[in-house]
Length: 569
Image (cartoon, rainbow, N blue to C red; front, side, top):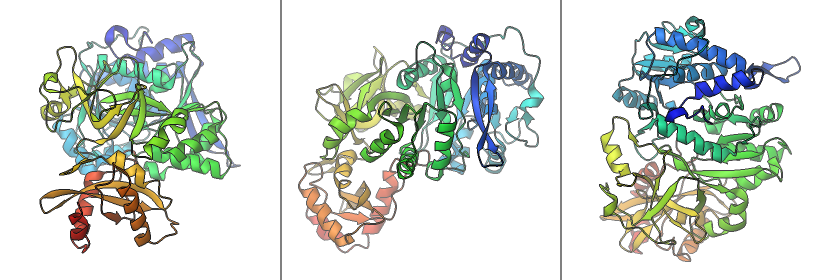
């Protein structure tokens, strides 16, 4: 990985060029290309020689139109071969890229991006339509590039091609210059612009290589980036990137075609992928139902929300005994921090999760430090204000590492709230509560801001919800905070299985009996039923509890039982 982080500068374009010099005919990108007469999928394959030549020919064209070192460039480019070309060319010229998912809301995208005063725009035609309709960045700019199609006034990659230099000049940037902004999901508040400097971004890929278990002997690795932000991972290790059969951004995780994903996985002998839990759940259940096996698929990594016990079992059945399934834990600001294997979770920790002990997210990656402190609501101006808690005691989770984002871009208030100054190295507040067990594993108990603080104690989301989820008629539950007579009241909101057998009233009584028997849920005396729990737009997996609490508050305004139920507290 020496070219990836040469002198602390993120240098993926050079990594690809060096791979192309050594292995020009190695396949870099495989892209689905329709079906033949008999309905069998066809594919386009692009070598490292082709990819590097295209990147180095487009980079001079970018400079000609004014996209160069430090140019703030919005990128809305889902995985594709052309996305690889333009993405790497942007890195070759040292552009400062800004990535945001339209799923946070069309007008929200406009509001967030315009705060950053972007100068250039790169995207697919649909993104350009969004730019002109909703004001995603500058409405009119000569510095605009469209890929995988055409849009009036925008440069195509073909129009930017120039003669590639024999020895490309490295971008004139330093390790402390901005490399990229990644926006958070916005599921717990407005999406925040997470800044990565070159030195942090390089280290991030180093940790990702740990997580993906890339072979140090340079075995060719085939990866399918079901999560768009990760489509450079295979190329960073000299491997092959397979474009997933997903129409981004039209196909949300819940709308992905499991049959198509499995076909591409087996056709292209995909070895690994990162995906949200809802995609993994749909795919694994489809595979088990139709007895589909994925013999080459050796590693699945899930993130964005917990992967349930049943999904992990189905994935292992689909993949085979030698495969591995891992849950990664972290945040947009700390990608990733820890990992937990399915085998260890199934054997040791899931039984405890069902008893209200939280979710075990495993051990930290090399170079990542974790600290549990006594919960503080509000900003922390110095690490000296905190109290470090011993193993086994629940508190707020802090992390630090060289790969973690140092601050938010042009957002001093978010930086103040989420960073903890320390002379020996700044800490990041993940916003979660948790504890470290006797084996050094981290357990997560829910968001600090989403715990329900009552006179008799706090109720934590991930301690409570998994107890209710063990009921055979419960599909999923979410803890809500409702205000009554000036006090916070914990309410459990339940989405039932479609084929539940008992009535809601019978299930309510059984759930309240379960609640009374566990210390993590004994303060919960009210149950609401909902057809569907609100989830985050990016992964379609994480419960949006602020929305849920608002719904519960409105629902209970007309519930005659609320006063009686609340009085029991």
